[in-house]
Amino acid sequence: MSDEINYKNNPLHGLGLKELLTQIVDHYGFEILYAYLNINCFKTNPSIESSVKFLKKTDWAREKVELFYLYKFKNLPRVSSEQFALSPRDRIIPEGQTPREPAELSLEDAERMREKQAKKAAEHGKTKSYRSGKPDGQRGGYSSKQENARDKQERWKPARKAPDSQSGSSNNDDDPWAKWKK
Image (cartoon, rainbow, N blue to C red; front, side, top):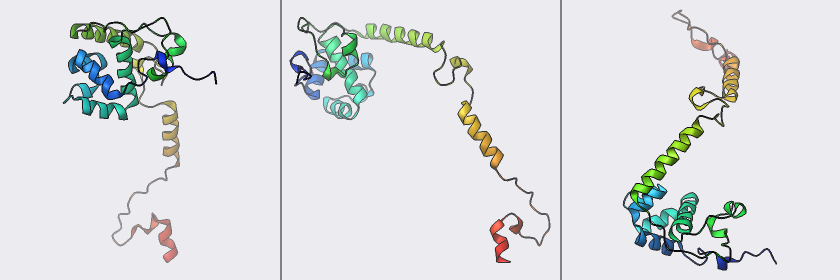
């Protein structure tokens, strides 16, 4: 079995989520974690227990915290392209790379990083939308599939008759099942 993963070279191997979070919070605090990760469990009533509970249930948030641990707290170099596709717990750190001192982070740096990401997202928004094929500012109300389905519905609806103004008539004309009783 040469396909076995060598977990010795992964700082996350054998490290529980609670211990990982405790190390990060002791070093950076909840405010920095929220500023960099933008996960609400670090902002509203933050505690280790509630954060662990949330992170165990939410895969995307847990992976985000694990990536923060590896590349900010352990300050490891970025991974190769084939390792990038793997989740943080499955990644293997090459032999020559060892964890370094935690990165120095500040709220100002987090704000600059968010502004940079917002600018990048705005530039990305100028390209064609993945859903409609139109630039983002020119989105229509419905996709073509939705419009076709709506048109078919309109086509197959029975025409409604105007109510009779006669005083003694009932609405049996509109009900096809009412005629069988007569």
